[in-house]
Amino acid sequence: MEFQLLSRDAEVVRVLAEGSEKELTHVEASNVTAEIITRPAQPDLEAALRLSELKPGEAAEVVSISRASRSVERRRLMDLGILPGTQISAEFTGPGRDPTAYRVRGALIALRRDQADYIFVRNVREAA
Image 1 (cartoon, rainbow, N blue to C red):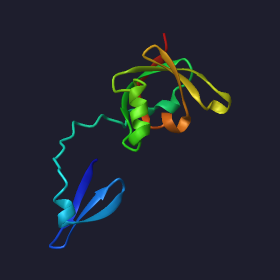
Image 2: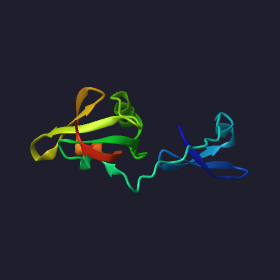
Image 3: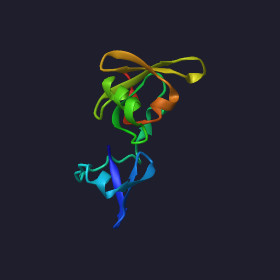
């Protein structure tokens, strides 16, 4: 789990974890093993589109999965092969444009619009 150290004093250690602030006693905090994470440079998302913006017949390359996608949902997307550098194409949409079928690594998968909003892509082109 990632967390951010907010403050510590003689009584408590305050951290931000999973979107909420937590207070740990020093005994609790002494049972936490932590390491500083150095993050690789973030991809330029300014030029990226959300996967949900692809129209049927268009293809693109996955840039990243939003950090807003958490836990089981993020893991599912990664298990489906949606990783940075992966080629993905929109094949067809359901009624009301939801869900959309995408071709990923030779497999056809369906994602709801809210799931596809978490995936950033670039280099949109006509699918082969």
